[in-house]
Image (cartoon, rainbow, N blue to C red; front, side):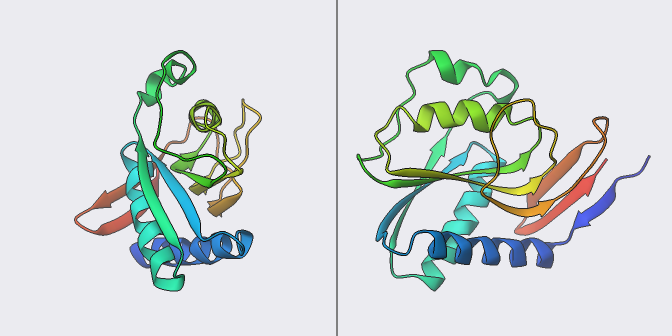
Length: 165
């Protein structure tokens, strides 16, 4: 079966813009926030989100990358990965697609090793196939799919797209 388009480049840009405003509204009293992108596509999405946040706010946004093997995300529970996050700061954890919740759940464990003030989660697409008790606080698109479907988000040559396979 051929992939079908879910989101075009312009739609993804609109979603990132909207999420940036939602983050600002959710953190009106914060002047300094940490945006943590989960390696590869989550980090790319986080980078574009930070660019938009900086356009609409004079606040300071620190961009960090959390790197681990998504196919073995449980390693987050056993390794001592530390990020440069000072105490009592707001952290926004970003990934491209939320499916079972495993990756976000394990990445949250790394964030919560720090003494954060508040943590929120951002995903471009929320598939709603939870196996773990975590949710997206901000999602570009919520989509019901079958378990057999695969969603591929692409960030190639500054052109973004999302496809259902």
